[in-house]
Image 1 (spheres, rainbow, N blue to C red):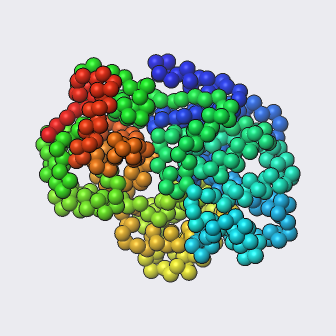
Image 2 (image 1 turned 60 degrees about the vertical axis):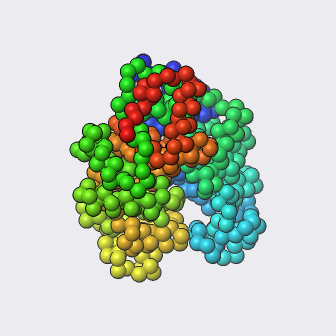
Image 3 (image 1 turned 180 degrees about the vertical axis):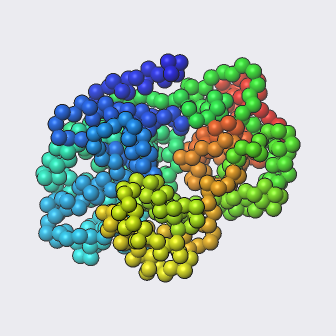
Amino acid sequence: MSNLVDQTEREAILNNEGNILVSASAGSGKTTIMVKKMAIELNKIKDHRTIAAITFTVKATNEIRKKASKLIKKPFSVMTNDSFIEKEVIRPFITDALGILYSGDYAVDYDDKYKFNDFSTGLEQLSKIKKLGSYNDNRFNFNFQIALTIIRGSQAAQEYIKSKYAVIFVDEYQDSDSDMHLFFMYLKNTLGLKLFIVGDAKQAIYLWRGAMSNIFEQLASENFNSFELVTNFRCHEEIENYANLYHNDKYYKAILGNVEHVIFKKNSRRNFIVEEFNELIGDELIDLNKEITIISNFNNDARRIAELLTNEGFDFAYIPRTPIDEGLPNGQLLKELALYCKNVAYTIYDFLENSNIDERNQTRYEVESIVSDLKKSETLSIEKMELILSKLAEYLGISISEDEILKFHDSVSNSIYEMAFQINEKKYKVMTVFSSKGLEFDQVISFSRYYRIYNNEHIHNHYVCITRAKEKFIMMIDDANYYNYFEQVIEKRGIKIVEQVVKCVD
């Protein structure tokens, strides 16, 4: 570990006493160091307070819990962003802040009929019909706007948060929108809570749904102690180096000798994937005994590639992005439930373990009695499915919105999503860059036409794509502009020998 280029940064993160901002590149062990810091902060606390770890998905909360279980013995909170503000701010303090019209329970529902254009309409809907909806424009986040309104207007809410939490850890901050940012800065600047923020601007691929493109620039004026993690424990150093060439230039390292793990297949033809795949095999550039994932950034392209290669005898599975993969508050729980519904090898034990639900016999029996009918998902009506999910939500003490129920029903009932729930059984896959985020594969193949980085487009998708590969990354050069831009980049760096950056084959 002492040879890591960022070892000093890692040690400083653990020793620093103030508000911390960590810019963590792909595969750099951000969750590991965050959990270590959580353990340190918990051990400092000598009163009744605790800490909270907040992230975007149930999957990420499960990863934090799993890593923390080996290191942390004291109780602490782990929640998604939406769960945190709903459980800790909106539900308990909305009446105190906004008045008696907002008393009583409400339902979270993101269906189109509950969308609106302005804050006052959203408030009126919440008070009159008890539906917490969302804006038509996804650049704005009603949940966080109302949470900020409540905590500003309720002294009780302020005192509660300050008395319960000493430090708030916020993961994947690059995916935050402006309203989330305002809320977290209020916790730091007005309530005096200490923040630990971690993220990677290079992986901000959700700008289309409201994430701020310049959020790390915004944080520069917020008096954080800033650190950067760049050592990539996932990718081969040649792959990491290629990603750094474009996306983290100061960490690019000159390599002596020829590169073997980053390959350009030049003069690639857009409609000749089968022939070119066979050429990669014939030239021993890919290993059929290892995992191969093709990242094709449009669903129709991905489906066609999988069909063509499967017809050639390679048994590629197209892994579609399902409606429940779209950043829903309970997305990971619903994904695990869909696996239980659709995959015969996935048992109730798997569902309980992967959803971090208590696995005692009584719990297993009770949960299975609620969800067992979902095994007949192809024939279940949406009304029956809604009843089952509502019972499960009540049992788990969570809120599953009508929009989430509709998307779950579509995901498990529509045959086009079938392969999304068989992913672990396939060695060869085709998927979009959005489906690949957070995953890693032995060998990755993609296509330069998807990344117009020479026009400053698709920058984040490009970085995510490259850094999914552990052992080999192959770019099919079917856009001459991509290669021309590559030549400009290496010329600017004074690199004379192309083979020290990529291996080019025809």
